[in-house]
Length: 122
Image (cartoon, rainbow, N blue to C red; front, side, top):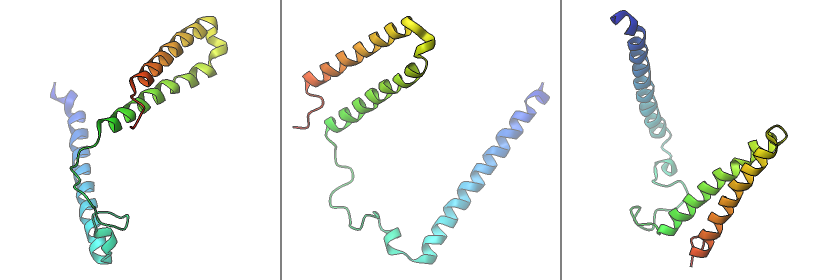
């Protein structure tokens, strides 16, 4: 019975060892490279040229996250239009009606969010 699981255990052992070795090498070689170059810009907390001017743990406005989530949701829903458009000839009337229902739900959701003011920054 153990002979059946031996290849799996060997694979897990080799992959864990390889991941550990590669992460350790990357950590030490990365720090060695910045120490040898002595680049103060690379060692600074930000590479944009100036130090942070406020606390990094400051709270973001909820509207920022709301707009980000809405963008992702509508972006993914719009991505469903591409396969539909490519295969429209093959799926026929059923596909056209199904996509019409999908787009109707999408438009109703967009109008609802617009009326609720989720897309406004004021």
